[in-house]
Length: 542
Image (cartoon, rainbow, N blue to C red; front, side):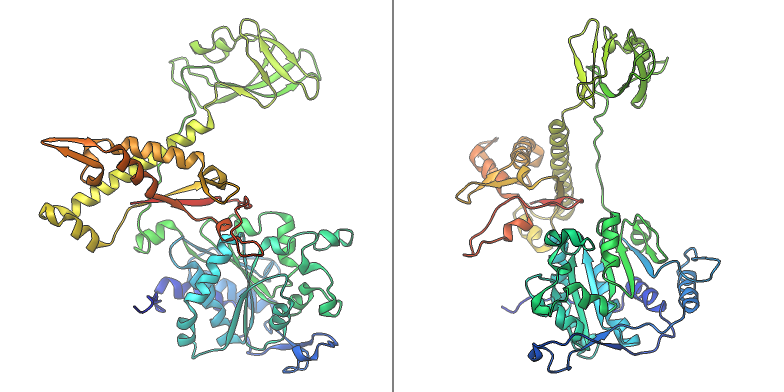
């Protein structure tokens, strides 16, 4: 059987518009490169083909030309135009907003080829926020290789994931005179990159290396003036230190791609969720939320701060309150002192009866409040009456399972209406469509762990999921979806507990970057991996 390959459409209007927006910034740019001397390398074999000469991106346009080009692009795309008194861009940082699912990765990859074809630019660095996205981008480069070679007349290009142990990668990136695409995680070059006293803890890319004739790998990159393509800038450039790290690459310019931009720097193109849905580029995604803020059966009190700088001593607390008509309000912060009756302060909520402030203790490290006729003692930053976080998360799992099964049921009925019951399985298989639900979790171990012997062990999320799934599937209305877990005895159906248990364990799974880690002998390593700010996704599908 031949390997299935994805076919890419090079003529999608929304993608071409985004690419043209990037290319338009350099309208009028001459096609040329600049050269620089790499070093007096004794390792002549590595540079024999180009005599140690590096190849860099170069920009010939004047600041006012870049300014006008940018404004023209923004005008074409119906965006607010950048405007400065000096008629020059405040920076060569540009943003492209594209909704998830509209081909953002394809767009920035193809933009590199267009910039090369039109202006001769050859050095590109894709900066990503996490290992998972880095692997995804590398996979995209592999999948699009035949496509781009066809579209750009078999153009020569290299792509690679930066590896600090492979110095030749950086040398080749600097010296090759054709397209070079480096994919690098922000964490690989954001540590102590300009502090000589911390050189031993800096990323290797910022350390001098004898194999590079005493130079730093970053210096090879800086000399090339790379075009930097930032994937998910709200994560990559989320701190001052990370922004400084990106600047340390000495980029010719940066293009930032995301669906959730937090900074608008010279916006060139915008395709938000509403536009994408209106143009039928993405399917509608439903997001169900659960709010468990008001636990009406018990008093919620949180100690925010205490103050003994003046008399009387006071404390700021957060409580649930109600209006005079008894309507609940959003949580409010109030200032209290000894003797304050929270029943009155809350507008008469009965759950606060007896909660009269007694002592407000302000010794640093031991701050607390207590009450005259209640046993509760609340420390600084602590609370009572708060909904347990595990309860909240389990409710989310339960709601997801319920919504998932309802969508399965709706889809099943839609495609089997008018079809003989004996052919239901066949038509379901022919359609090849399934319902998919995603969980974004805070910690890998909450879903799956491993024993010393490497045997998978369920985390609490997996345990909750299976319990909620089996509970929901006991409802007779879902029997047509999973008939194999039901036993028929005459006209009666009973659930088969063992079959249900096996089904529950088979319909969920997950992907974690740490699952691919191996030791020197090739054995899997299951140590906890560092999570990105966005968490990691889990899948639940039939």
